Amino acid sequence: MYTAIARNKRNTWFILILFVLGLGALGLLAGWLASNNWWITALILVFAGGYATVQYFTADRQALSLSGAFAVDQQSAPRYYRLVENLCITTGTPMPKLYVVEDPSPNAFATGRDPEHAAVTVTTGLFETMTDRELEGVLAHELGHIRNYDIRVSMIVFGLVVAVGILADIMLRLTFFGGGRRSNSSGGGQAQLVFLLFGIVAAIVAPLLAGIVQAAISRQREYLADATSALTTRDPEGLASALAKIGAQARPLQKANTSMAHLWIADPLRPTALERLFSTHPPIPDRIERLHEIGGSF
Image (cartoon, rainbow, N blue to C red; front, side):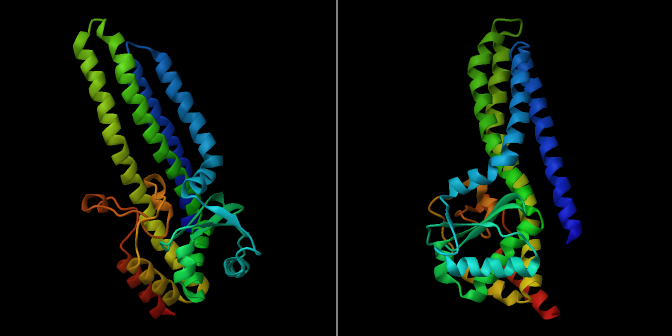
């Protein structure tokens, strides 16, 4: 457990540094293609550093806003508050902020940069579907993400996926506004064609790479959070039952967003066969089987 926490903290900085360096390299290439206009490189570097800093402190609020979540308290959601409070007392975790999304699809996610600045969000469909035992398993899973610092890594990934979309848009715009300048120099139409191809490739490949990163980081996080839930509640069958219900009643969220799909306990989208290759979640039957194995070891 402590090894996983330390690894997540290291991964956060590794991803941030890699992100800034990657955008810097793209900035150098873009500046060269735009007739050595190095102000483009400087602009992208400033964007990379500034964006990474801003996302570290604001990505959780962005995720809550995109999901349509609203805050609740002990008076407005006593059942929700009681279960989370009991789990926090059991594990010594600071009480997170609680949010609800009006959606019939049963789902939940946690976000934040550390246990002291965390939030747990559930859908109304989860309340209507789960027994207290099953709901406790789901909430222990989300608190597991908080305790393991998964939320920090997933929050950074969410921010970088959004940045990839912005970068792809910038590259396509530079294709049209920067390529023309290059055509007047000794490269002519050939340089303009290279710039056009660069912009198109950035728009296509960047989101694909972002999806691969999401999937690679998220799948192991889900298995770890499942195990953490089982150890916390000493009732892996409760979470297994909850996952079975979530799988049986799976439907896309009304406000599903691909950039934050990896945050939810179950895939909030309806992926195609190709998209399932890059799914941010391991198959629910595999997760249930692992929980049954954990239950047999108690």
